[in-house]
Length: 511
Image 1 (cartoon, rainbow, N blue to C red):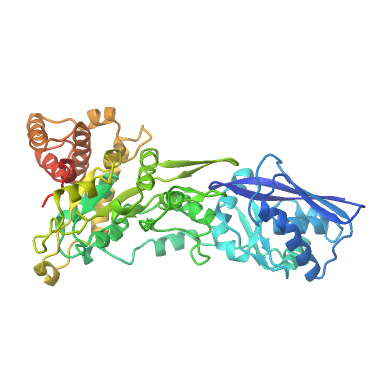
Image 2 (image 1 turned 90 degrees about the vertical axis):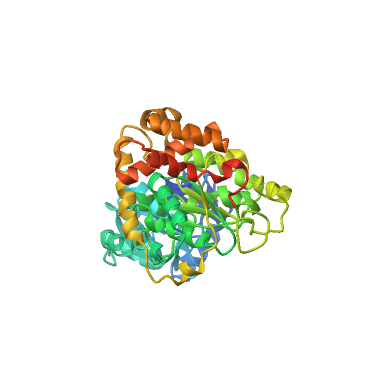
């Protein structure tokens, strides 16, 4: 007898529909799974048989052939346990085969028949809606995650008998409903605030420029000057995520298995801070079974690399192409997957090996050659992709004692959002949305300088021996400074401010 049930598999961050077909025939009892299953899928027959037997159903003494169609699509993970078990029950006459019609089913089975959560329920729900399979049966722990997708009916189950009873009509189908709008409105705030940072007005302004124009930035300063504290507060001044942005971010965390059941939607922008010992695969993604790396987990948020020169050179160089393209393609023998990584890169480093080259209160013991060798660990092509260089000096005692509070993250974010709206309007007929993404042609079109600005920039380039790449970066940052003021034209003060954020172009940080 033949029974079929729809399910899904994950490749990259996208889900693909799979039809689980079970055929039973009178022959030596055995179970064969075909259709490019991986090791976890092949092992599912043992879990399925134990779950069927331990929940009061009988294991048919027939030969079972389980086909996962389409056969040319690799099947990975444990999400096929529950659909396989239900199809076997239907094929063996223990439930009606037509009871499975119209449902898409995913779930891992324990040996006692309990249904365990699986990774990737959000992309599965999105795929189900797009393909017209609007009735989705998932483990109870995944119910909130799947229910954030509008237009899909989600039915949570706890065990194999529970799923069979609901499909067979012996229990009422209980649809799970989740209020996405209420969650989004109540949890998209941050626990930390920019007003908590004492002093460092120059560094704060640099990060505001970075947020307003989507610019990558690097902070240079001695230990304890507040670089990490500043970086951690950057997401709080970025424009609030839309629900579409939140779904994109959540898809990545869902596929990676990093989405907690209590947080079905990533309502705030992610902040990833990998340690400098992170491997190449850990940064860009990969592995035998490809998984998203740190740059993809930072999608729509911030990737913070502290102690930048301490990272492996190959790992740092791997960031160059993803920063440009906003996506990373991982190729393996089994296939190729592409992960999005449209994020802001924020880096931090000491000015020298001992850390005190720019600190007037501490003596630096590093020679010029040691400082040069330390800074040269960051390649020119990578530095070329960083628009803003921020000097972060040690915090003065009077700033620490100052009881006045600066602008809050909410106030700064309002200004950032106004600047971003100007940029969205400027680039509405293009594929970009922020000044940092401008091409050379767009820089010429939108960064027109009058005579005073041209003279000022020419003088700065001669005095600082700036390169052509620095010229373009200065124009982009100046355009952002003008947008923050609501100015249509770039003015001399915008050029002056942008030039101040090119301290590493001279090869040594400013002392």
